[in-house]
Length: 282
Ligand SMILES: Nc1ncnc2c1ncn2[C@@H]1O[C@H](COP(=O)(O)OP(=O)(O)OP(=O)(O)O)[C@@H](O)[C@H]1O
Ligand SMILES: [Mg+2]
Image (cartoon, rainbow, N blue to C red; front, side):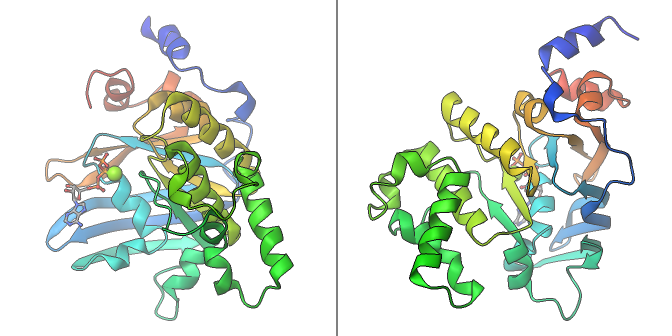
């Protein structure tokens, strides 16, 4: 044991309230990848990734730029299909069912697995219409059902109090932090089971970041969340499990280590993980 361990514990105030180690390995798994490889043309961007993402938990993906975090995240809801020249090998399952099966509709997958991006991307529509956007895919809802759904989504996203008197204003009139919470409201309005977040707070100030982090912890009570972040403190604060990724000699992204966040940040097994989280590399 090096003398650095206590420092690492202090440096990353791993949230005690997350109860990170209390669940056993038999906990239910929402999404699993098995031997996943992802290619852009001939370039392999991620290699042999086998990861399990537990149900109603926050899983963090950390690692240096180019290590394939966004690529991996996009394959989890078939967002990757939209990029020409890409291909995957291996398997991704949602509740044990392959999402790349021949008879699987990618639109259905994306409805069950929503996504929030690095830069808030509200549509040039009203606040109301942004949140209501995906509801038409859910079949016929009455006007009051739509209104209820928009209101509850904005409440869950912690934005209702700030916007309920201006639902007909343009979403573009909101601040960056509000826009990001609006995008989260839009993602949860269709009641997905999983929310993928790619550096959701990197464009936000500390207060807006704090709000979104609080929200993530709240949302994890009902949703499964997978978040990519460059912010080590954030991973330590909000996630239950953390996977550290790096690049191999061919620049393919690989997972070095995965485990309960508390352990990864205080007692990593692999020296590369320790170097990264203590800021020696990356
Ligand atoms: N559309 C694309 N076409 C070709 N190569 C791509 C494409 N998108 C990403 N890549 C390459 O795949 C590798 C992984 O990229 P990716 O965006 O997944 O990394 P990342 O870990 O998310 O990085 P960052 O932390 O900078 O966001 C990189 O080498 C990148 O250049
Ligand atoms: Mg990325």
